[in-house]
Figure 1: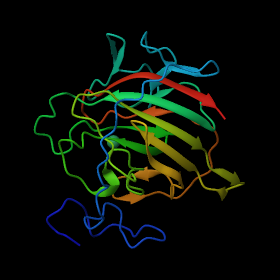
Figure 2: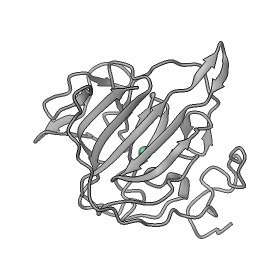
Figure 3: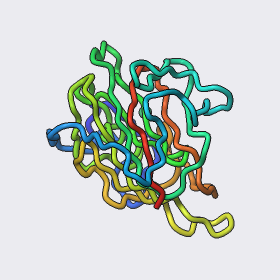
Length: 237
Ligand code: MG
């Protein structure tokens, strides 16, 4: 344990791991400078979730109209308005999301925080790691609080970045977990997760037990920063 690094030492041990949730002693991912942002127009069989026009197909995560804005073809977090989610549920899918944290990270402790919640529950972290230091399982690309990314493939503050995700939702036999969820992901074209299994829904300083669910919305996080999104699509698997 290294007490002068961010993290917690009173959190649960992760299953099969020597590390705790937000463990300050967990090594940070090594840096791999990516070649650029992967910007990929929707393939022919994709479902376009955001095409730069408007918020059709999105709602506030707690119901009602989404509070985010569309400016210059970009979907922008309006801090304080809450998370937004797709009105339609997504099952197993390939997912493409492009995003950018603010060009000026300011002096916030964890600048550019947002996130992509798979099935409304499992967060792939968005954070400006060019401008901050955080526990490894909170790093950009982490399955938050559980699995750090294999590498940090961040681009500079304000630059467009991409996630490409292969998502298999968990399966349940009645109330019992039959098969955990499974995530493969690339950050700016670099593999950050390969067939990783969440331990359950992600949360701060803990992880939650799996509870039965089927296909569920894709949710994007308002964590108090005007993070921008563009070109969001999925392909059903
Ligand atoms: Mg987040």
